Image (cartoon, rainbow, N blue to C red; front, side):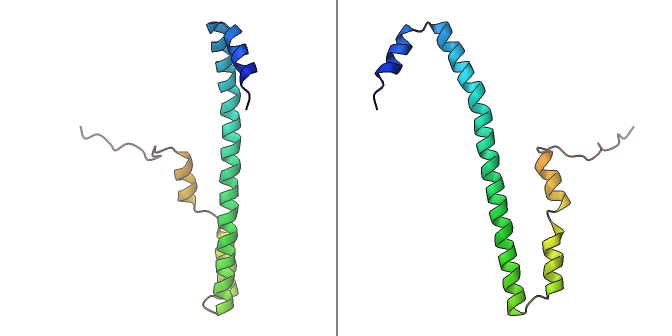
Length: 101
């Protein structure tokens, strides 16, 4: 890879211009990384959901689970506690304990 144009550009830029360019690069890089991370997370979630469906179908096929039980499991969705834990970032929604006065 020929880096001659990049080195010529860097040599002609002042330190202030370099700082501004690096800030602009970070401003654009952070959302791009966030979008890629969100897409990866959605892909993993979808893959896991499909794997669960396959496993439940296998249990029904072997007779260890009824079709009604399988339907109930697949319709259940994520647990309420799991969704709450995901978004509270370690903070509890519990009220503080009363003070003993």
